Length: 77
Image (cartoon, rainbow, N blue to C red; front, side):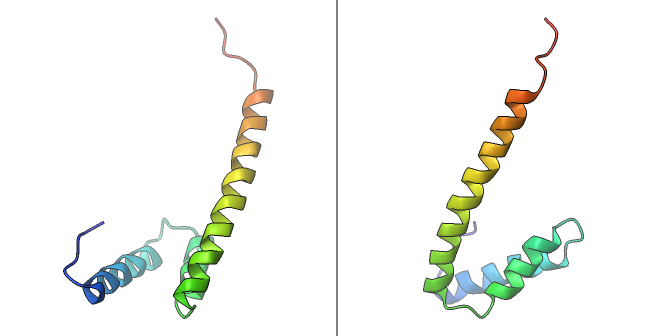
């Protein structure tokens, strides 16, 4: 992240980066939808929701990956 001289500069830089993600064809629709829906949210509520979302989805994703790794055949020796 780029160090900014003021909170307004930081917000401008963040908005520029969000616009880049929204315009990038390689970014998922899910991510773009999340960024669009977050645009007008109260920042405190948004941070709380992000924390919960991150905790739940990281834990679920890691459990799925762990299970897939457990079930995958071992590489030949």
